[in-house]
Length: 400
Image 1 (cartoon, rainbow, N blue to C red):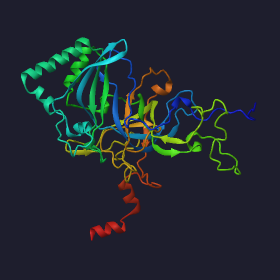
Image 2: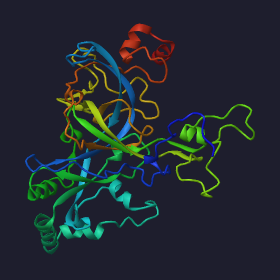
Image 3: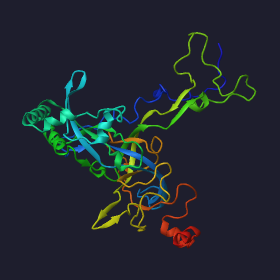
Image 4: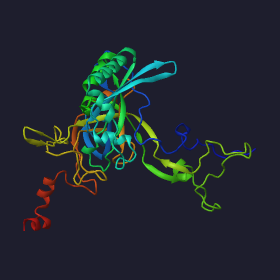
């Protein structure tokens, strides 16, 4: 019987098997936070789009730590979160085999971007989705049916979820089809939940109604796709010695003679990336308002702080690479998140009750970097660049 000369832990986590392409593009909430009827009615999740990363400077407030009262630089991710539109409500009843849908009630008016979600080819379709259903809201008999459906939800259901869609027209992207998602309502009685859903039909819900600053949240999404990869890249196994016959980026032994098949845990070449992943406990550093007008003035200073009062927006000079400008509300999260730029992310309220000091720490940002991310950015704003560089040749040409 052979033995290995050196013992080592296995390469790659079997908990993430099978490593295959995700069935869904948008992250799915496989569980929602536990309901507490004492709290007011609120949404438990939201949808956002990954814009890019930058860095911030803040003072640590952690008594006893070596970095307490010291300034630290941290990487942050900016996630653009335009308001969601509530277009439906669905109720679930409890059965011995888990939850079962009792019924779904849709709003009278569904925008074109929402209806596109129900078609594979919108251009060639007749665009008749929900035209008959909308007539229910217009006559008295139909309204009675809808009211009866709402009363059924109140009477029988144990879980109420609302159907919300993203507003793609507010983003820079070329996609026109909205992302539609079921989001659970927590807090209050079932009747209060149904009334909340009824009142918010066809209305917008901003991200500030769902999350608050310094809160912990979970990010659910699909990772960057890397295509078909070999064992060294996919499983991080050791390369074989240089003189190995027929290549060295291989697994030397893929198993014993018997059992006469390859085991499921043996590293093999195949798909890497584009996997569905849930990342827990991401700290929210800032919930910023989008560019808006107030008293006739355009307000865009959503990247200024108490210490850095420069009038600048969160978008770095030249825009976020492969994304562009962030014009809507945004969430700034500590560290990185899954997926490439523009990827839709599901932001969920944390499932845990947090007791650690890091989770409850109050974040006070001193500085947010808005220099160019295309190169070695030196300037925070266009005005700063202009004052340092002086008039350029291209400016003179414009004046002429």
